[in-house]
Amino acid sequence: MATLEDPIKIGGVTVPNRLYRAPLLECAGNGPDAVDTLIDDLEPAAESGVGLICQGATIVRGEGGCAAPGMTRVHDPDFVARLSRLTDRIHDHGSRIFIQLEHGGLRSMETWHAEYRTEHPGLEQLAVSEPPWQLRLLDRIGFLEYDPHVLSTAEVYDLAADFGRAAARAVDAGYDGIHLAGANMGIVQQFLSPFYNRRDDEFGGSPEARLTFLAVVHDEIRERAGDVPLVTKVPAETPAPPAPIVRRNLSLADGIEIARRLERIGYDAVVPVQTSVTWDMSIVRGAYPERAWENGALQDAYDAAFGGATRRRLVALANRVQSLQYDFEPAWNEEFCRRVREQVSIPVLAEGGIRGREEMDRLLDSSGNETPACDMVGLARPFYAEPRLGARLLEVEPDGDGPRVVCESCNNCTVPQVTGAPGICRTPNVLQKRGELERAGAYERSDR
Image (cartoon, rainbow, N blue to C red):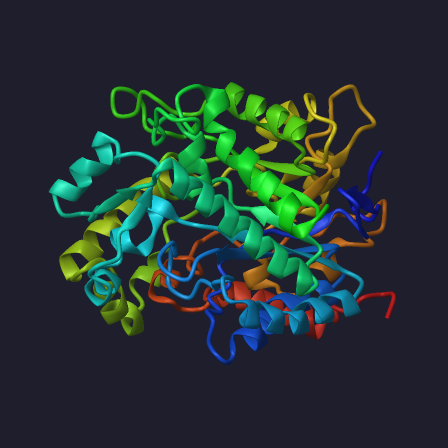
């Protein structure tokens, strides 16, 4: 039976244990304080013993592609070189760090952020194909705004090369691996999904052809960055709205087959996630973030983002409905992960609603008749609430009750990020619990 404390190999890199901080929106940007902000955000997890830190959602190009304000771009060699200060700090604690590469495509701020569109009137969204009718309808009624530039075949190869160039810069800066944002409606998912991808060249048509972009990205990274560990999220669009609203989407079986083919292509690990075809609460399941929406200090910033008070209220209403549709479910990707793990020999990483040590041990358990769900377990939002969470989850007494995170999945941390606000816990009773744990020494590692 694998335990959380056991090391694991991803590609040629050994990770000291099987706990990882899943990618989050770091909101560090590219300004003069960006590296210090990232160190402040990420180092506490490494200091607490977390084996792998995944720096979230960095954009491979210098223009467009950001899904939210404050996302860091990694197109500039000089800036990326400065990130070696971050990787050095992570390595000082014995942890490994992967960087997540992304481009938002039709999910980018050019689509939904009113103030950003006004400031960048000539900026088009990159699109795999013409947007499906469901998104065009949202454009007609004024809820979103699409002015897409459908990538030519040559431009798809250029975009894949940008992923490769970004990966090479990251490796030079000391990153141990590359994590592709293959889900959450980013451009990689848009290539994989029949909902978005209606191309008639080598990058579209059959399921095999829709995987070609990830195959070319793999080759670009291998050519430019060497044999660096390469991980990607694998989507199954199983929470998609029902027919006739959405007739074409990635089923669970489709996601499993994608993972199998990615292993053959040469990917070193996969992260199976169930997501929708749109950017909604399927990826952050939990309570309606009432405190965040009613925060008086953020109302003007929300209005700037969504285009006025009326649209802000409509988005909040949609958020409330989605919180009912995507109610919190512990380890909601477990079945998908287990079915993928039955089919591949590379590590399977699980995330999404994992909230306690006992749950982690169960997901990793290979002692029974059932296949383990995964080889590593990751948490995201709980690290906003407890930056040094690893110290509580690792080195637990075998017969003791496993600790649980204090995060309540209330999403008061996520909604303010549409304004560029930092990803931090804003829920008073959660912060109070963290304070009590701090005073009790719960975040002190026993090996120090």
